[in-house]
Length: 102
Length: 193
Length: 93
Image (cartoon, chains in turn cyan, red, yellow):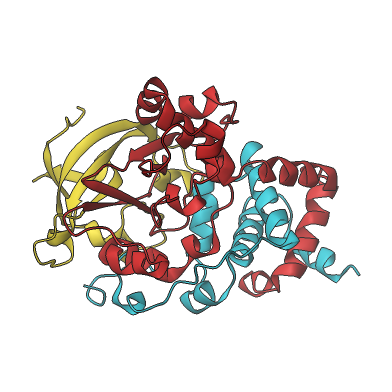
């Protein structure tokens, strides 16, 4: 089933690749980075700037190797940035300039 | 475009924070206030609901009928939150919640989703091998008890109303709430005393 | 028309992922599989449009039960799956 159909890589239910993957059940507290990204997402949602499904779509667009490697909130900030650029909330030039600020 | 998105997340975050402040969309104070309000949502909220459902049959009925109303009845903020649905564990059915597509989680009543809930192993295994998955928590569901795996794919968020453990007769709501853990309300563990 | 509890359905065996950028909330492991309507959960804007900031019409959302045995070649287990599926992904069994 896994190989024949064009499953998207985020669509993980039941796939053979992870059937033997152990689950780390220990608690991991969120970092300040994590909480800040989460808060941005909530504010953008409340202001109708970016919907949950837009966030998800741009997460799903991250190539598989990076999707599996990046932490949860690193995927989020990437999706948020992708969406805000696409919506023209800021331009790529503005983002580059902001990245170069000390 | 793709190159700039591959910038390290910490750097992206600082740049985006600066731009959101400059554009008047979110100030640092707005962000701090949002974090503070999010930190108020913890598994303790869901545990209060469970404890009340164990002691008040009318509340239990409300909770199963409309989780959002049941949460609001305990002053848990639900405005702007997705509708909350509640799946009841019984002597013949045990519920396990997963989101195979991303990480949908009843945040209003349980807080941030735990690390394991978002992991590839959990998302993949829950639907296909729930009993093997539960062994990670040393949770054993009797073979004659049906496991119902709830894949949270759309607009609802789902929590489990676990069974009240034996040995808690006569306990107060506060005492009961104290034994209900995050995992009990997702279905990876069951409450015990 | 709203499907009533107990109605036998089948999830469409569609794979829009193969045709271009999409956002779909119907898991791959249910496509083409038979299930049973448990409950109409309400009507919600179609996430497939919301994801692209397109006007999103409300669509009926159902809780649909599936036999784990049927989905994953089980060996007589009574375990089941319960999944939110939008009506436009369902067809008569």
